[in-house]
Length: 379
Image (cartoon, rainbow, N blue to C red; front, side, top):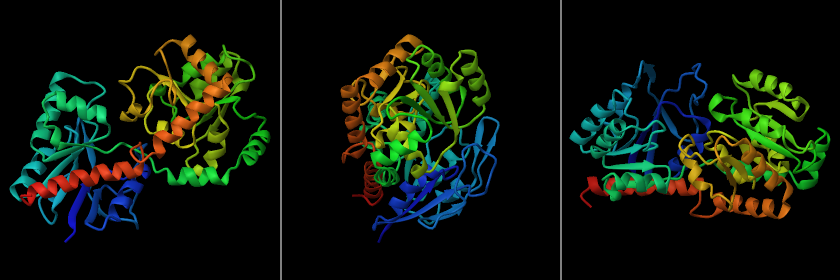
């Protein structure tokens, strides 16, 4: 019989749908995803349903510092063999759900970052206390697993599912945009291949895009910054570009979510510049063979930063040092040999079997599920 599996999440963002769809295709798994499917005003939108996997409505709310999802306890206490719960200590229903699952012999897996960006000893102890009550945990990177093991967590309970984006749409879009078509696309917009920097993300303070604009003012005048994204920082950033005399070299293209429309921008750029916190955008760029320049302060970044190897597939600049940021941009934009090497290694990072891709992420989940199923069956 297939293992009955439930995954509880606050919502189902677009970038998570490929993972759940892939797990739903695994023959020995019977998957349900419990999440809030109702439309909301949140900045991060969730799916209202799916034809690729079964969804169950599970209302989600934020109440002060706490996260409220009452259906979590029901998901963990009836009709399933294994439940995967969000590893977030702010959930009011997490501890009761773990207790209910244990009483009924249901396997429990916590899934989350495993570390905090604003870490304190108290937060770390509380987070790890929840894990001691679960059968296993899925984390996003080998480095996080090693950190948790050093804090006394049993290494056999820790499974790595590298946080990834689905590379299939990126590969399809790349095939649809041969170099001559990209050159034509850019030419229509007054741009030359490899003579512009690209930024793709929301325009928010923690992204520190202002640093790229300031750096641009010190770089050769034929370099342009193309900004793909929108957000609350757009007007201040436009004003900054004007005040520095580079407004005509900073192009705000708005948000583009479809890979077929985004591909020519990615394929023609010299690099992706992301001066502040970066997450899955890193792996998105790597899928197009686009090297990244970002900060060497790893704390604000998402766990995907472990995929970046300085000097191998991208370059890190000294955080806050605009001269070093400009120097790293200049290195890639002016050295075609370096750019080609970084590009090839970036693509390899997400294409190799053990790399940062959906296949490896699915296998991490399957390994955790097999482990917990064996525990519960006395294997």
